[in-house]
Length: 271
Ligand code: AMP
Image (cartoon, rainbow, N blue to C red):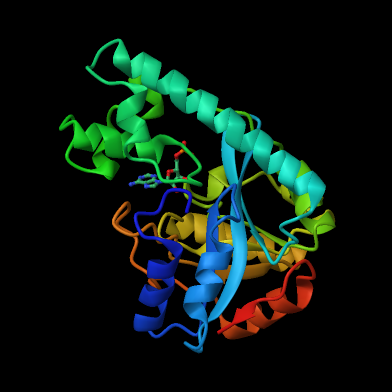
């Protein structure tokens, strides 16, 4: 719903076709895709774990927080995700204005690539740049015009991960740091910060993800052992928008069971 190239129903069909027993739907800063995913899973035998990938910032570093099984009507969490989504929209408009100074490009180009309920961000600007013929693929746009060093980039408001974890836990959800090892072991979140996140109810760290480096994964395993965190895995599938293939990484069944036990905000949907 936020920025994948498939609808939630198509994602569920792809998960069934891939032979998965369970799949999580984790749009950026949005739970708008849950009901469509549940409806599509009905009668398939697939379990859908409703979730979200919350944007957070630790200082100037973007840190994504996976949140599973939270109450989607929790007022504080809804208010915070609304604030993030509004900030993302304004920021996307600003990026487009900067690009428009050098390219024949407008906000209408981006709107044409945006579906109702999308969390508007660089993926949609990337698709618009592809449609205009300035770059060949979404990934090529991220590596060139949309790269933070290209001169058009702007960050957006997002809460500190500690604030986000507290909100998720208060909404009955289960927080997991999304691929925190993409820059190698030295760049994994500092241990003093992770200790605070663990204390606030962080459930786990996503270890098996294609962007985590081998040394990043090694560090995450060490930290998980020290702080009693669970280790998850996921494909971070975005349809055709990213090279990631569905089920290329997954979470062990016993970890999933613990995650389900921990979540109190919503039940998994057992189709
Ligand atoms: P933004 O949050 O607007 O700065 O955009 C970054 C987000 O775009 C990441 O969280 C990715 O999940 C998403 N994304 C989708 N497709 C791609 C891609 N091909 N390359 C990099 N990021 C992508």
